[in-house]
Amino acid sequence: MGVHNQRRVYGETLVELGRENNNIVVLEADLGKSTMSCLFQNEFPERYFEMSIAEANMVSFAAGLSLTGKIAFVNTFAVFASGRPFDQIRQGVCIGRLNVKIIGSSAGLSDFGDGATHQSVEDIAIMRAIPNMTVIALCDGIETEKAVRAIAKYDGPVYMRLSRNDLEDIFPEDQEFVIGKPVVLKDGTDIAIFAMGTMVGPALKAAAELEKEGISARVINVSTLKPIDDNEIINLARGMKGVITAEEHSYIGGLASVVTYALRNTPVPFEAVAINDCFGQSAESHQELLDYFGLNSEGIIRKARLILGA
Picture: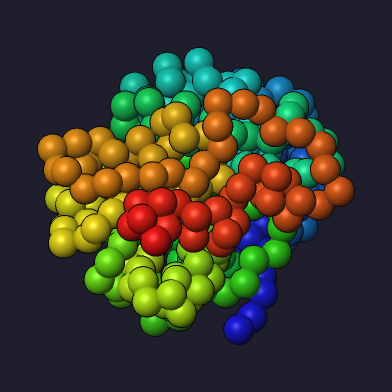
C-alpha cells in the first residue's frame, strides 16, 4: 500500500491537464507552494495568475476567465476558499453556473499548527448550501487524480477539499471516479459506515477491528457530498442494524446531514463521528488533533458498539 500527498497529486495532475488542454488556467492567492499550484506556474506561467491575498477578486477574475471559455482552477486554503469570497462564489459563479473549480487546500484540521483561524470545520456546509455547487472531498491520492480529471471535464462550479498531509492509498486503481456516486470499499451485513475524505482510512481500520468482535461492517466512501442520490444512501443502508457517518468536519451541514436527510423516513439507528459545534485548535500533529476530537477508528468502533449494544 502506497502513500501519497493529495496536494502534490493535485498539482501534478493539473500540469498533466494543462498539457492536454490549453483552456486550463490556474489562479492562486499567495499560497502556491502550499497548494502546489506552483507546479502549474512552473510549466505554464502564461496561464497562471497570482492574485495575492485577495480571494474575492480572485474568484471574480476566475468567473471572467470562464466566460471566455477557460476552465478556471482557483486555489487557497479551504477556510479562506469557502469564507472570504462567499459573495463572489454565490453571486458571480453559482447563479450563472460558471465553469470555475474552487480547490480548498489544507482542509479540516490538517493545518494543525496554525489553529482555528486556518482550520476549516464548516467549509462543506457553506458550499453545500449554495445552489448549483458540486461539493467533493477525497480519501487519498489515487482518488484525487481521478477526481481532478473528472471535474475538469464537468461543466459547472465545483468545490473540492484536499488534506494537507500524506494519506495511505485506499481507492481502487481500477475504480472509476463518478461525481455523485458513493463507492463501497468493503461489504458487510450488520452496520453501514459512510465515511468522507480522511476518515475513510479509519473507517476501514474500524471495520477490520469490528470483524474480530463478530460485527460485519460495510464501508462506503462518500466523496461527493453534493449532488447525491438519496436512493443510493437508502439502498446502502437497507437491512443494516445501524448507520454511522465519519467526517473531519462539523456534524452540522456535512456528511452527517447528507445521510440523515436521505434516511429521514427510515427507522435505522444513527450515530455520527464528527467535530462538535466548535472550532479547531493548535497541536503538535494532525493525528493529535484527530484523536482529541475522536476522529479515529476507536471513535467509530465506540459508535458501532453503542448502536448494537455490544
